[in-house]
Image (cartoon, rainbow over all chains, first blue to last red):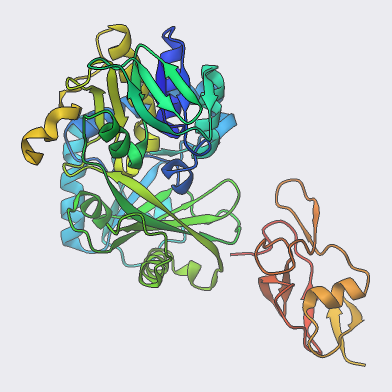
Length: 370
Length: 86
């Protein structure tokens, strides 16, 4: 089989398919983790998922990450650090607690906490917070590279897919390095998954949603968990194209602190945006006033694969037998990668899938776009 | 001649010199150690991009030696690891 894309999701597909006994070739236009995987923070979150199929996928994936980490966690800096969501006002806190209660009924571990007891440097005067011990973090580029290595897949980097082989059924891909025949092709091209799907004549509506991350100078441990404001969940779920930012702060093993998260739909424009960067910095200082005189070393940008209904695209495409999709995870691709890879492997080998995948089916947009 | 104080000793400074230039001219090649392994670090890129040459100047930590102009009387200090107590 062929996996298109050597990001986190493609690497997880390769890993789980190889473990299921399949022979895997990964075709990647750039290099490993060169797209959205290398432009994120490595979040594995259940805390920001509202009830529904994405939460089920996140819970399955968080469990698979824990299992992977038991064997290989040090190779990709797996940190079960937990997430702290804070509310600035009583109204925000009521909404946050409402969501947490629903999540708790669906298997998410939640703890109502005073933010200051969990994060000593957090701003004073917050209304309250909820702590999510299942949230974790990995170094996403290391994780993608490591899972690819474990899969023993043939990895063709610098190789672009230019078309599909086969008339009705897909029998492989055409690439800039020649034809690669395969019994099945998995589209794990992330934000560029729409382009691959279009080449196969089975379109899926994936759009780029730009984000910036600020990186501070290395500091002593100052932010212990992944910390974000409660309005982040609303930002992720919003449909607007304009700039939205909500502070998301976390430390890394290297000592730097990563500051997100902005969302805007501006195509693939990489131009640094001063309003976005300024808003991120202001949000970070609001949550952690101690950051006010800390230097920012750099900012980086990337494009989340955004689907109009905020769900990923996972599973076989009935319009093109032999083609499966595993893309469109928005900002949650690192967290959702293992479950996506495991489901793809199960679907390809005829094993009953670990969870229902109907909500993720690739042809669900057809009625909307027709 | 004008001088700066580097870890307690006086080093000569000329007008317009960066902190890195002052240190290199005095034969100092490293003025920071890394967080984990404690390895020595000094000037690397020399143009403000790599953040390897961080140093403490007049009590302000994490200043880039390659971009910061040295002024007579400056107190410059090596830093260990993260170099900043919060």
